[in-house]
Image 1 (tube, rainbow, N blue to C red):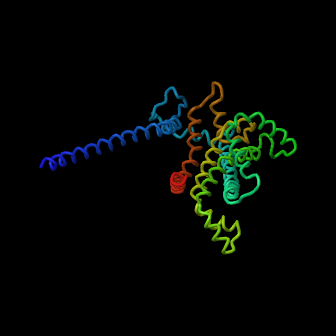
Image 2: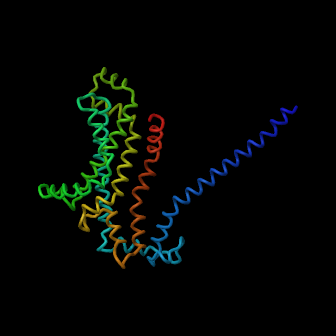
Image 3: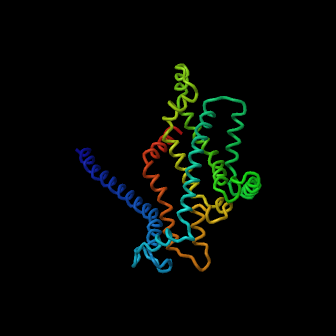
Length: 297
């Protein structure tokens, strides 16, 4: 009888503990969401503030208007549309080339056995250990001298900047993709070879569909890192017509005694739209790729 009574008493206690635990998790989640969304909400609010002064900025501006957006898009000196187009051109090109080179290279490292394979993999990993800022002077000198021989790869060119980005993006992505290719059973390749398939057919028709979510994640990370990169672009690009959106926005807030934070925030809000759209469009692939990596890695 006492055992039954104890069990009945423990049931409400367990339910109460679960409710308390759930409430605590909800509070923590709400706090984290608030800290994540507050800077974005403040930027949107500042972009709608016609005053353009952060000293009088509130979360809900008194006289909200689209004045800052109109000034940003209509001003002939800002060239915000050109900056956005430059960033999208470089980011999309680097992403496509990086995914193409990375996937094929990782497949070769994963499936083929050739002389120098281990040395090459270690060299790629060793290069990634050093931050890019250490090579900034060397990169500037190389691009400057390369431009004297091949002008479209020199300073102040988007092509030259794109090739620098491409070289920096491939290293860690090759290691990441190789790890996922290693998780695909080799029996698939052997079965395809028995059926007479070439290595390219095996890669494109059998292996690639299995690692597609990871390819999407790599492509998205490459696009975001290229699209949001500032330091290299600031060093290599000199003219207003060749600026990427990050360098162009920096020029807006770097003007002494003439900083208009409203216009700057309006540009930041518009510049964030491609990233948000990509996340929303590719969210299923992102979850699948990250889940695959968590299970198989």
